[in-house]
Image 1 (cartoon, rainbow, N blue to C red):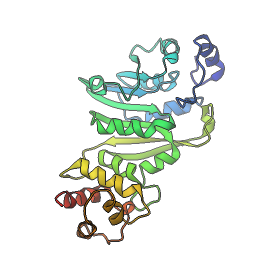
Image 2 (cartoon, rainbow, N blue to C red; image 1 turned 90 degrees about the vertical axis):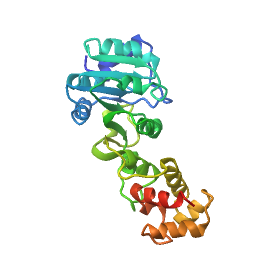
Image 3 (tube, rainbow, N blue to C red; image 1 turned 120 degrees about the horizontal axis):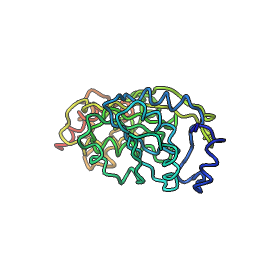
Length: 280
């Protein structure tokens, strides 16, 4: 069965009572080249266990199963489980789990595996919570390869000073090196979304520097970007309970003008600022 052909899939979906859910942001790939290309760029080999999030009808799952040691596909929609039972019946190295990935014990799934990667065609509405959950848990992952909204991918990989750069950019750069791989047009999906998508790879790396209090650093990042039009001094003074004079001195000690805004600081700069402010 061609899992990117709606003509072939419709009878199977109707058989199991499946219809697309706007709430779950379901858009299935109907261009066979896209799942193959995602799998080719997922950084996997015959030693890799792939955790796939939201397999849908399994078109990407099949491509991953050809390249990986095993695939663990986590699908929240129980209506798709019997569909996947048929579409993946010939994939002996695939396990399907009916669970919310944000509630799953991912550490247990990674335990004892030689090498683990994550791959997914993520619903737009929950992209950032899923990505940050994967990163913040510090799972033993090599790479996260996801298809997301193009605009979000631009934010993930933006450089300091760019309009797309924000708190999520800094946070991601603390855990990983992002790289946008390619763009996917709306016509490659059914139903077709109204925007373009991008496939992005996050190669997990150690933090780029040391920081005394990581939680405090992230609170600075959040406060700095909450009102990004304000100077960083004013944005932080409204949130962290440190006098402006102390914040201004710490910022200038880090090599920035007192009027600098958060968007000019890399995550390494925020780490340095955090260490200077944490003692005040």
